[in-house]
Length: 478
Image 1 (cartoon, rainbow, N blue to C red):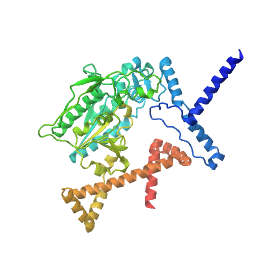
Image 2: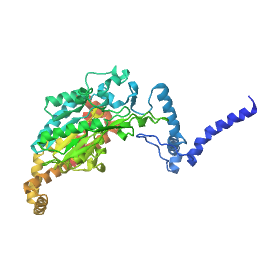
Image 3: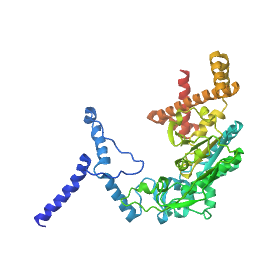
Image 4: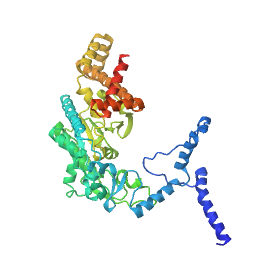
């Protein structure tokens, strides 16, 4: 090896070693950011105490590893190699199916029964939903459960065999669908309807590189929901026409929401998707009901195209029962809302889920609403209303409020009492959750939990809940 060649190799190595460092320090070139829900370490603040106990060094190492020069390019390069030569995806939760179809693993998990939560839990949820449905109906409101289609259920033939070979008989979807029917729950099973009509649709209903239904599939689903509400409420909604459909390769976000997660140097090809040309017609005597949707990301597609407001009085959406969105704008955390006040004006409450989230369904909404409308709160209700009638200043304020709201005084008293009970229940639940968190982070208490759960013949989670409630009562007495 001659001297010039040695110097050339040394120079190449030096460039390879120092260029990322220069990029990290000087940010000489603009690089595309990685897509997805990525947690990037932030630069730690220098503190002497952190330096001497080595915490600052550990945090800075994490920061550098996440932010070194050209990191996103190197990640895309590795991802491209795995995708092109090994047919593997580095993106968390992404599964490459047959014919290159992209899936999110959580959909497959439900289809094969890997995340089955058990008959007892599902039966408990269904019984609560049915009881809550009847209680709300007595108040003039309709509770409707909608199961959106899942891509794994729709394309099982494209799921890799390594998953299909592990398929079980019991799944969350099958158990819920069966018990909903047996218990006469208001249930729209779009998952079954989409699969049954798979060969009859004029256009594809799922994008190859996305996990949600495309805009044509979404329109079919929305049309079904609107017709169901019309029949259930005996009303006439504005007409929805999506018969004119055009293909476009300039995809909207949800039609490429998995493909973008691959973070490749050369992105997978975007296949044209069908996009309906929406038309709306308001006929004489139409009604716009007040509809609240509590659900997962499948409702985002409707919201993104600004469709709900065309048919409903308000476009309110509780995303996973955690965040409140009104007309596609985040307003508040659900935990900060008073449930009674939030539901009092509703005509219809829709609970929507797809197979990726059946194990989380119904997102805690039913538990909280059940405590308000179905538990025996009569004693507390009587205490509150008695105080209202005895307290002249309070009663007068209720009369004023009733006039402002065009309500009878009795109805206003009922609403205010339910509002107070809802607030108390929320504070109770919040404290229970705090107690559960404290118990789980107490090693001695958790050792006691394991022993007591065996002695009482209950699960550890159930024993934790019992101890959390006991702790609440003890603190209440103090």
